[in-house]
Image (cartoon, rainbow, N blue to C red; front, top):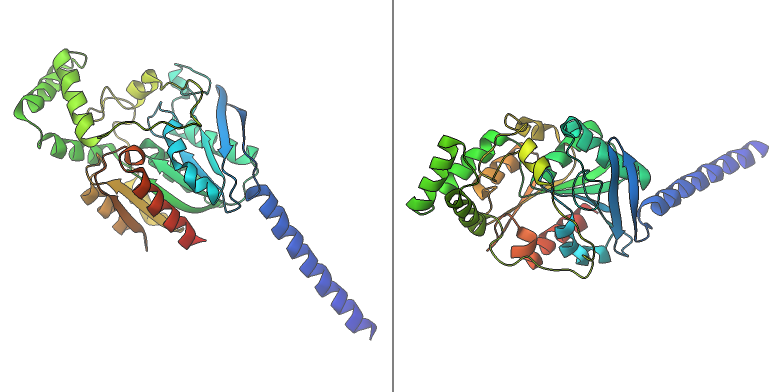
Length: 319
């Protein structure tokens, strides 16, 4: 009889322990309260913000650039009804500490900034969403710290410069001859600030970058500028001309190692061409693909409603 009572108590204690662990996890993640702040990292402070009152698993969003800001992610405010949204400005841009220290501009340093945000918010399970350069950062983070990542959405993905440049060349070939000549001449003589080259850059961006108007948000109340030094140092003068430290970057084959659910998103007229993103999708077992109609690289501005729809559906399915 004592043996049965003792066994029952042990079983009760185990069940109670499991319930406590579950509740603790929920408090750490699903009950994140909206707030913002700064986190000390190597080289300065990064600014972060949590918004949304939903109780689901949080989603952390990684912006493009390098040297960009998280402002465009305010367009996903509706997703906050389901779960906390975490955004931050990578060091050097936006509301994070500005710098022009090239020794800080390594992929690993950017990965550690993501990890610093995770530690600050005590996340043991979360989703990752990256846009453009932010997709490379999301992949790099997962490869180093896979444990807490529950699923990943790669929006307008960049995983290798050679492929990105090939896509850009394909898109440039569809533009008027005069625009093609301006770009060709600028690259031949390495002069990227001429009026002709800049006009060609603007024409390219209107067709394959932001095709409509940049949408505003009530959440976007503070000045947050991109860092052109970081963009040029790591990437180059334009989206279609790579001259920086990412010139030989290539992580495409690493997509094969992903073990969590993945969604690839691209715009119908995206710089990350749908044909290329479909090839990326085929490298990841059971990955999904969504093509946002009437959108360029700025899918969250060109077709905000559809971008939110496909992302919400993916997260709901994962959960």
